[in-house]
Amino acid sequence: MVTITDKAKDRIIELRKKEGHTQDFNVRVSVKGGGCSGLMYDLSFDNEEKESDHIYKDKGVKIYVDKKSLLYLMGTTLDFSDGLNGKGFQFINPNASRTCGCGESFSI
Image 1 (cartoon, one colour):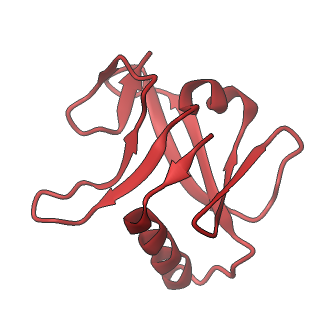
Image 2 (cartoon, rainbow, N blue to C red):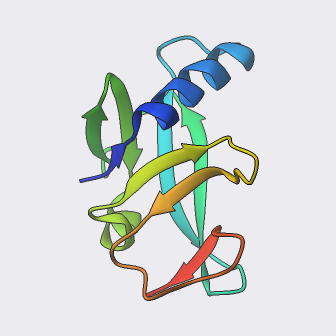
C-alpha cells in the first residue's frame, strides 16, 4: 500500500488545480533507474488507469502504482515539506536501505 500525508494531499490538490487538471487526473507514483543511489522516484498526474496498475485511495486521492514499482514502494508514505528547509515531496520508504542527500533517489 502507498499512502499520503495531509500536507501531501493538500499540495496535490493545489497543483492539480494550478496545472488545469480536472479531478479525473490522479497521482501516478513510479520508480525509475537513475539518480546517485540507483533508483529514482517519479510523480506525475495521469488520467489513464492501466491494466497492471495497483490503485490505492488515501485521503480522497487516488494513487496509481505500476506492478514493477510496487515492489519498491510497498509501505511508502508520500509527504510534503514546505518549511524553511522544505524539500517539496518526500518519500518515506521503509524498503530503502540508502537514500541520497536530496531524497530523490534511493537503493534497496
